Image 1 (cartoon, one colour):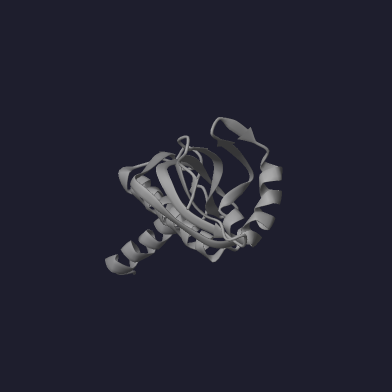
Image 2: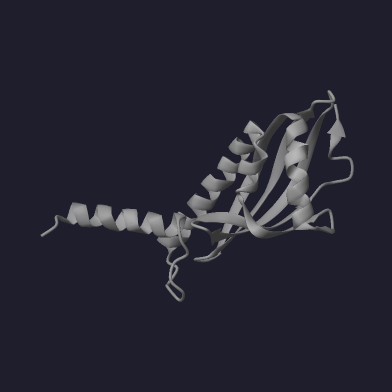
Length: 167
């Protein structure tokens, strides 16, 4: 017979794995603990994306997005395949990508397989031409489990006129 500590530990590991690896079974109840676990996982993944952006490895940045993500920027619907194709050459010119989330950083868990992040991303960037600039964009991201992890499947970002500027 297992001790209650072993059982609780095993249950906790199973709950964490369910939130971070695969979507739970359809129709399962979403209690407050499951909602909090999903929100924490999404928050960690969002921060990890910024950490990876700092490395300027475009393929690793793109891994945070779903295979068929949707993108809208400043009211224009982007062609995801073209965005992906342009990311590798663009990142190859970057010499600096330093981004932070500006509070409030909000995660709304809609279901066991959908969450929404709403926040402002503030980035300092520079490239091989010697240009340096700041990009500030309000972002809304929809995340869903795909291939064993939470990925951005839709993103909308907006900037104020003049928010991105050369320094």
